Length: 393
Image (cartoon, rainbow, N blue to C red; front, side):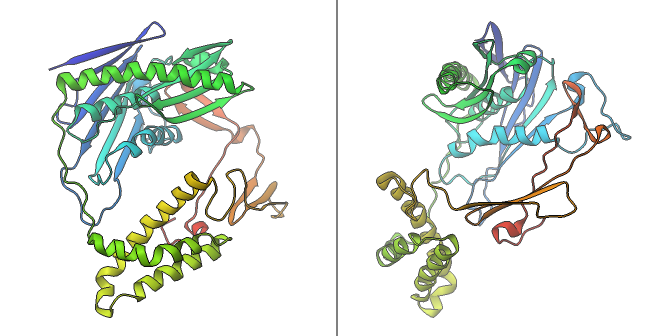
């Protein structure tokens, strides 16, 4: 059964179609806006892997060159690895959904978005967010908090919902807003000299449009939605009385340790309290119950962080919300680079270099909108040693 719901946005129709393409996926939605089409699917494993205590959600977004009537460049004439825009859009899609899955949901879940047609006028990224929500809503996945998303631009003094590429180029404000019926869950924006009031007006306008998109998703679910899977509530592997005993004995010392100033000193203090809790176990219990202690401590730390912020309006180390750690800057560290700087805030550091090139060094970008050249390149690396971990580079 093919069902289509329409929402009017700035005199144009946003269409959500279910049941025509990708019929074997748990959920699938074809989103159309102008002549830009995005197919988004959602699939989830019905079983869980042992030992997984997090949400294994994967989002993959792809813009194939055929969508714009072009052949890929390069010798092989095939699509290559994900572009920077595709990676960033995948993250853009991921962010509003991740916190909305049911607590304790650990089933492997994958959202895939394919741009099938690109008209060069309407950007497919916000369409993919709406398609992902619709696909999850009509699937059997126990996700029941629909999300809508729009882009708002301030063009010639007027707020425009889902502005065209040309309008975006001239916009003083461009903001992507994703939200539920009663809250905004994600904002990503760029602006040139706009007031706070204009930004708030843009968010308010976006949320009104989001509610209309969510209503269309609910209509789709009511018409063709699959029954939601009933998942057993997560059960802690340790008895509640064990957790209560750990909390009673060690919540006080943990609170003292968390209020130690200095990151390294705080970590050492917390580790000593945790090690003391593990040492209090019988020798024969430590192999089994040691991980229980670590899990209970993890929960207590989260609770104490939240309590300090909400009840006292301060961080655990006593700093106010607007109080930053000591900041230092050093320039000219590396003699053979064109520019270098070391920025330090507390124990967080960024070592930054700058290299100047010629016009021959510009980056050629092949995108659905056509070929463009980028003169400013920013490369960001997060090596594992920066957080004291052992991982692949």
